[in-house]
Length: 216
Ligand code: ADP
Ligand code: NI
Image (cartoon, rainbow, N blue to C red; front, top):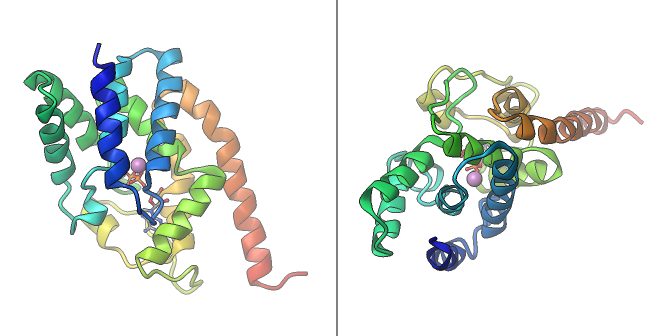
């Protein structure tokens, strides 16, 4: 129904994320879109809402706007309104975008609709596996975090504030988020895809420690 508007939003997002270097580039967004549509074709959900939300899920993310977690949803709403989509439709997509982000190991998710669960699962799948590892080191470097410091142990955060403000190194991010994700997924389809990606990260970490300790 809204195919032509999806295409326009895609072009807008492509421009906005053109030179992104923290792993939140347009290629990430496009993979999330493809993964979400794949999941939805098996699990159900409205494909166009999922596509809009996937395209807009990282707009004005708190990680890049000084920490305001409400801006992404607001900007999503504004962008969709400029395309004359009905208010209730824009609000639905905004609600999905508001609920996608990971808030800490012990903070529960607020994704409620099937569409929100699917976009969140797709975003989380792209945080796993070989691509997930690459994105994590790109993000860690861009935030000025060291690769690893064995003196600093991972923390399973109880609040979003503690999670977003915690001083850490990139290896900790695997324990604070990435290795926990497979058990936080909502759909069976995503859980199956996650298994292999999870193993890739576990194998990677054991190789990492071997090389770190110069075990030859
Ligand atoms: P979310 O919406 O859950 O925050 P994103 O799609 O915005 O997910 O991307 C989050 C990705 O950014 C993580 O999976 C990881 O690759 C990277 N990232 C976020 N925080 C950190 C961190 N402290 N250290 C390393 N990578 C991080
Ligand atoms: Ni994302």
